[in-house]
Length: 359
Image (cartoon, rainbow, N blue to C red; front, side, top):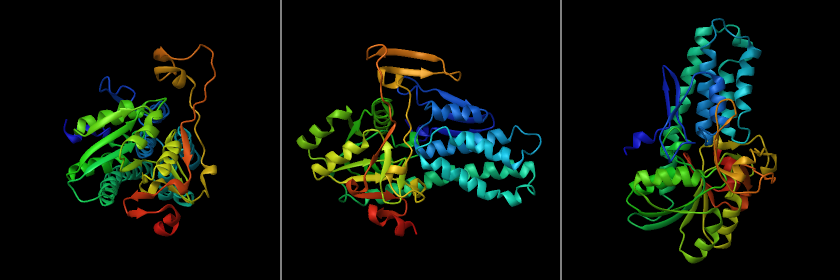
């Protein structure tokens, strides 16, 4: 497969076209969002996921909604559109930052002077800018990450968690983008992908991307990482992130925290690949990051999908007693002292230097 086929988001006349990640690896289907409600559904139900991709989808969802108006909405109505989309996934900071930037283009005191066509056009231009910027930042980030490793050719064994590739971004990826660029630089790679229960993004998405790229990989269950680190020479753990607090504490897909603990115990560098938009200096530490709690069905069943009305369209593979209670936090927080460094588009930065690094 050519790399352009891994692009998961297209902005077209018909609407926002999203590669439906609920269907991978079984089949490749596209979901078209034609209004903000479609975009909200796509974000909530993980048609699209990954902090950068969520932000891009949210922005285009707002553009789609604005295009429905024949008369310009008042300022409060404009903010309500953004607030409804923002509430779809509370943990990732990229969406909030994107909407803050969009709002700054139309400050309240200037909003009444802007025509409907200007509001629609500038909003669309900004969404396209964020999309294109994400690809550029991912490529720069990946190049910086390659510099952390010995010159090629060298044999590298890397563990990654969840999905942080093209599917989670506008293209190329963050942590998986580093891995992709290491291969392009000539390294001999073996990648171990955590399955990432309960939604199985590692099994369904990361393993799929790695196979499409021809990168040798092994799928492991989330409980196997300790054994792997103790029995194999692992060169690094590289993961993505949904939000980084001012002190470096980082929220990512559930299971990241114990992976960092294991890496620390075994003396393996633990890196987080993140663009500047993932850093939230408005919160002091990880205790202030909201953790999304998702449905119990994702834990007690496999392949649980819902349609736009919230009705089950696929519910098979029952793996727990009927009526059992299940916890399903979608994220956990990794303390800064377990993180070797952040790989960013602007360079490599240790957790205790991020505030001054980004100025």
